[in-house]
Image (cartoon, rainbow, N blue to C red; front, side):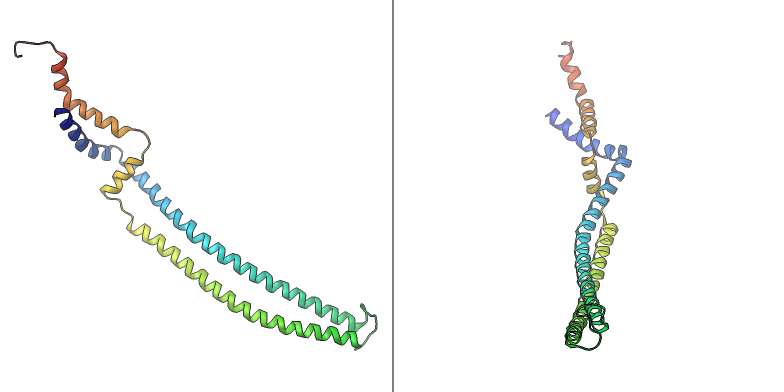
Length: 192
């Protein structure tokens, strides 16, 4: 019974002393734990933001490709009508007219695509702003209400490397059972 009692007394007495002895390390560990949670939030939201940015880049690339193709059709049309390429005949011939119609129809298609793309880009920018606001609010929630009470300190203490807690507890147990050990190791005297 004395050993069990010594164990519980050592546990109860050693924890407050450990908390005070390792206060700086515990504070550092609490910061590390908080930064770890903030990094998890950043990774989760940054992945969503990067996905949004990738979709925006894809739409902008498609729009730019269509613009280049439209410009190429225009240059082909102008070149044919000037007589510097294609049939080599200057003026408004059938080939010039065909390339003009091709350019004008694609120009209309480009304008429609541009309007649709700008609407989509606007939606993506709004979504990106919403994601950033959500990320900031999650970070603020973690920062503002991060626990640094007794349970959080005990958890941080348990995350510290080494078995210093066990060593301190064993010292207190040894102090508590020292009279019994001394008595057991000594020879029998007149009292016994």
